[in-house]
Length: 361
Image (cartoon, rainbow, N blue to C red):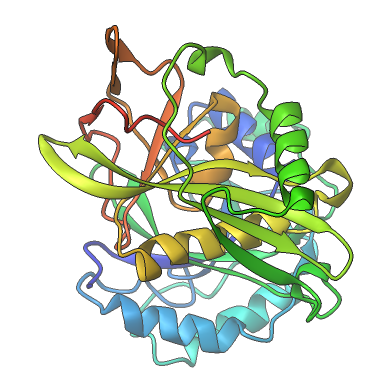
């Protein structure tokens, strides 16, 4: 697969800093409000973007090599700055050293970046657009900003259609810490067919499924598809995280396609914040595409879960999604998201789920 538009390698800004920056962008009606909240490592300055038509596997391979031994690192913002001669306002990192180091490694790599007339300046854009009077720019720079340190643990590759500002996630890498529990050699993945679970696994699944999902209002009265696979992450002492997968057929843009439905992703509260759900989704997506040979992946979720999956590259379906039921056709009342193996999915797909093939859990 080759990139369709110029592409960029970025460090993803996590919550709660992400939401704070997004709120600033929304309040300022900035065109950047439609773009990911990030600090560009390569493609904006220092070097230009990776040209359209570049082999994605080449970029992914070089990213894998460069970031293989890079642990998560802390970043904080020192305040607002303005690019000279513009009204483009950005947040400046307090210590740019780790960002400079990664930029230099990417610049020296075999990734074919285009040229840039500007030296590398790591930043997170808050306001772009037409020129503003100087006093208005000054008022923006007096606003409160997220000053607390956050941990960069994900590096992503995006392409950008500058005509439409449509930005697509093409590849991402989770930085691994040597002391992170999810990377411990005692952390194991169990792949289980259907409900062929032990009593302890069944108790774990039923308990936390009921606690987190219960009978979700939008799914009340709807037929449920069977679970064909369960992925369980565990250490030597206890179960850590769970996700369910269903092989199902849907009508996508008028064609019947076999896809992998994702549901029931949870991590018990005392194990949250350690990357287990992210690690399990990495494995679930790989299992759907590489082992089951299904694409796209599909999930039916509540609106509050959309940001988590969107950061992974899933696209929110903007059109109504219909489900065939014994008593007639119904429209799904929450979010539906898609992820293709080649990340070519978009939000305008038409989806219908035939009878007996409705969402898992």
